[in-house]
Length: 447
Image 1 (tube, rainbow, N blue to C red):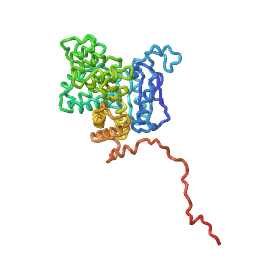
Image 2: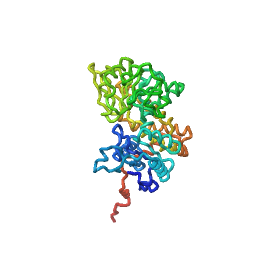
Image 3: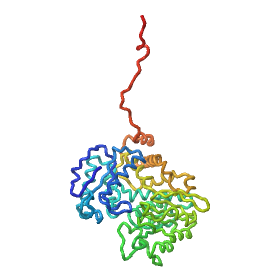
Image 4: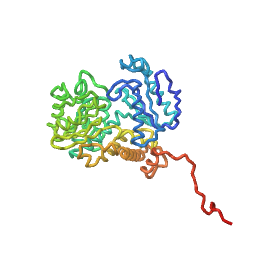
């Protein structure tokens, strides 16, 4: 485990593990829906890399979790005498960005240019800044932006099989306009473009609602540069609440990624059920206390009509008529371990958005008809190992076909090649081999 603070030069990095091929790094600023946890965000990189191993069989000795400590704006932590991190406000000066630059250089200098670096739970602005800055220079991706997008799109592609309606005919309304919402929206646009829909037309099908209301052109609160492509012309009526937005926009799908709790109210869910024969309701915020609604609320209020997915797990729901629904959990663990395995196995040096589009489609293809009948839009988590391997194979095939892989000679059978590289949980015997002497040698002769 590596922890860095702003007073430490990354060029002095000295970690005994010389086999690292995958790094997950956070600065602890935006941990799930819990906010700024400073160095206590270290559990996120550790947990993510545990999933690399558990879900995709990536060898644990190849994984390095990192927390970069530049302070915290959490007042409770700064008052805590037992807090383990720096007792200072979060450093947002140029020193912070220089430190991240130095960290990226130090990691690749020590472990190689193809080392996979996954950014996790950085603040919204920094998440987009670092993704744009490093994606063409390093082998890196942001799970909160790209991983979340891929798993959400997979759920939408699975829903298409139920309602028999292409994604290009949907209208989406997001609760939240941060990195998760923008990542999902951009991947939806990419999926629509693949079907022949022009980019601007695809963007016009996506609306966002944040703490300042609908994301519209010229709003007084302003919009960030990353949000501009999804800022829409103002509707005829003002949407003061999310319920107003639902009634004005009349979306076919609502996607919650705000981390603000139960904002998919009974009225919102009921309105979605009235507007649509089969409404799509995704409450993707984590942890469970931050989810926009529960599975029970969604299925009960819509009388079982909705297609529901959540970021946190919920128990099966049984309606009064006896129908039972087992909702799918749109967890990023379906995506990032398999993507990482495919990237590491093919020794790619850059990861494009198309990689996540391929992963998303592969995930959706593995949902069975039975799982759809039960209300699930994702494969059972018990199958996560095989799901991850299939995603890794598809990612590797894409990287080789687009000249982005550097593992040569190219494996003819990529699935067989990847399976040979998986970590095995059984231990090899260190006992010496024991052989029996042939009876003809050991038998005593009687003279």
